[in-house]
Amino acid sequence: MYNYMIEQAADVSYGPAIYLPVMAMIAMIVLAVPIWVVLGLGALGMLVLTEVLPLSLFGEALFDGIDAFALIAIPLFILTGDVLVRTGLSNKLLDVAEATAGSAKSGLGTSTVLGCGFFACISGSDAAGAAAVGRMTIHRLVERGYPKGYACALVAAGSCTGILIPPSIAYIIIGLILGISASTLFLAAAIPGLLIMATIMLTNVVLNAIHGYENSKTGFSMKRWLKALWDGRYALMIPFIILGGIYSGMFTPTEAAGVAVIVGLGIGFMQKTITWRDFPKMLLSSAKINGMILPIIAMSLPLAQTLAVLEIPQTFVAVMTELTDDPTMLLLIIIGILILAGCVMETTPNIVVLSPILLPLARSIGMDDIHFCIVMVSALGVGFITPPLGLNLFVVSGVSGTPVLEVAKHALPYVLSMLATVLLLAFVPELSLWALS
Image (tube, rainbow, N blue to C red; front, side, top):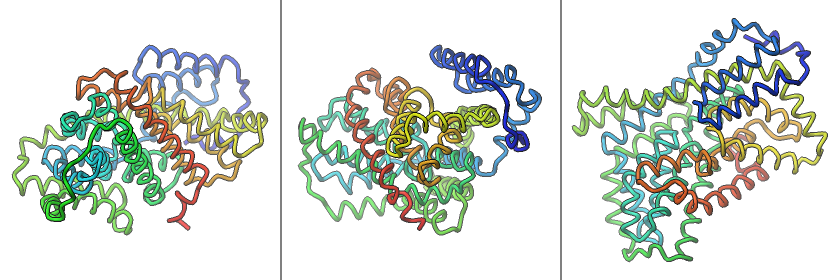
């Protein structure tokens, strides 16, 4: 819609017309104004003060921005996760995870993170995974010897895999914004997502060795493992359908999400774990979560378009390259910006607003677009366990009744280990691009 205007350089001085809306947005974030309101008012303020675009196009941009087939996958993946919980299939996935890793030292903690990874393969959402897995595992972790705050931090960190392991809502959104196939991003994100999950597991093992939280006395049982696989066969079928269908090219992510919902409901009705009376409740629960995501996307897009017309990305690249022309320093600057942004704002607005600004800088140092997407989502994922926003910290705090600061204190080692992995992904692009060559 704005392409014809974007092609023409906007002759606008970067004075109060830019700074005042930005300062107002920061103030509103501090005052806890809903983020979609902040983004919408910020875009309106810039449009009114700069007059680079007709104000009448604002409303049209809201609807054009979310009128995309790929976005249908978001409510469907959220609904799939809700179906998984209500049918009890999520418990089966955790049983498989515990039978796989529960016999090792720190086994229950390791199996909890593995269970978070299983859930991530279905829901694509961090908060949903933190709530679902937290309700089922935190009390068991405490019984096994973990301090409650640490158990909450472990679940919060493990649930970060929700946006890192495909299918991920974050990759759907960044693919839409930057014009990259979500299926391609899912393929590229497989190894990085698993690597971060392994990092979280390893951190738990090390902390257990230092503090002696847990020492499993049971040995690995092939019989128990096979029984868990058999009992969880229907639960395992859903991530197999989603990922297998996408990676084989049989389904688009949206189609895979739709099939997963139908299969999940079919299993629930077949096993009589849900009834038709549960269906409206599932739709309402999923609609509430979706209702928080889509308004943010809708309001972020006009702001991103306005910044593009004002040539903010080009200006940002010029400023950064004047500071330094060292590619390593510029890459560290990009990661630093993403980490800080993830600490104070949710992933969706960060992706929509920052990805068009930072991508030109990434390209200037020879960074591949897909590699940039992987690094961006991975860096923003750290923000889910980093104050002051730390969405997963608040979710597990609400589920367990543990103070947020107590959870955040125990989450610090996971923040550091995830940061180390993000740096590894940033400086070793082959980890993201190997499957695409």
